[in-house]
Length: 495
Image 1 (cartoon, one colour):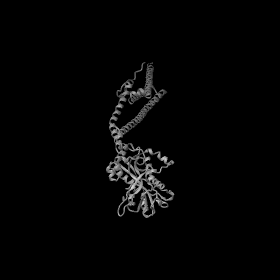
Image 2 (cartoon, one colour):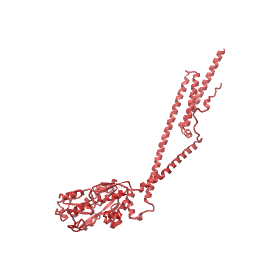
Image 3 (tube, one colour):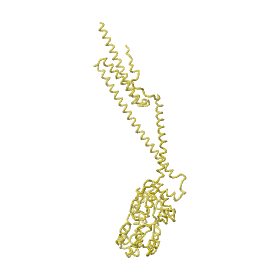
Image 4 (tube, helix red, strand yellow):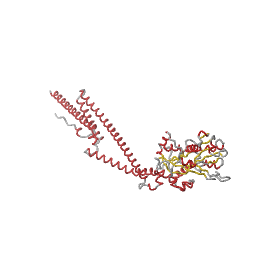
């Protein structure tokens, strides 16, 4: 006898079928990709103006913070850097002033990027030691901005020390300036020019702050310093009459031997004329330029702004930068010891300005880097999302597989023969309904594309179909057994 067809197998259970999707997997895949592309394009169009604005502001604006090296306390370096710092603060920049020992330390700080701007005087003592070669190797990281004034070498002697000529320095207590400063190199060069060895004097290495106290206490006889004529320490010592200035003998011979230095003079009466001029006579000495330096990697916007400040006649007049006021750009760019920073060079020579603003080039480069970074970040995020999605899909599939395994195990237990057909039929019917619901749930959880392309999902659905067929077969067999049992029972009753 042919068994009845199971009605539960021909129609879905209570769960509603999923929303209609494209039947062609390729169409479904292309539709998803189009949606993703549309979303990505919309996000880029929304964010692009913001990104352009941010990059433009970052490239064309002054940096928010700048660190200046001020040199030793009481020197002309500190005075100038404080004035420059105030100008930058008026432009919205937060300025940090870092006190240092002098020029040589400034070079190290610029090379290491610890300061943004510093003054430097050329070191006339050129020694080819390994240490010097190592220091010079980093000079390509330092760039020249401008000469701001001339630093004059001064030989200060205590007025009552009985020193009339440089030859009288032998055996005296002489300050050769801190060894980290450019003044120290100048002091050694001048001693050599005088024919006096360092060992012939009682050398000390005193900074500007201590000089006044040491001269006042008469524990120091002479000192070499290299500062601008308006340096506070010079005004105090010479203007008060506690110290005198000595001329450099045979100065022209020294200038011929040392190309990095130039002649310098201190006019009579520069530090005061009453009751007697100080100095009494014009002092013949030597000088070097105080060079404003920066790092090669420092923002061109900052260097441009600083160069314009230095070349501003109002700034020059206010701060008594006479040589710069008279010579302007010609003096500012004279004999640079380092390569001129491109931003400063465009101020000195307008012909070098290109049709395309370098700031625009920087913006383009910055925007390209930003977009590339965003694309890379997007790819990484997309891959992470895909892995996460695959993990979630695998987790959902694992739950379905575990449920299917449980049903499989239960239907195997029905083969033991311990239960009657009357018991097996309802149990098999429940299992068949459970497998059908499980298959429909999987169809809801996974798209048509995943069902066609994912081997694991495809295998799961095939196993569901196979288990349904197996349970159906058992169900049909159980019904036949039950019908035969009924026939046998009727036959016995009739006989």
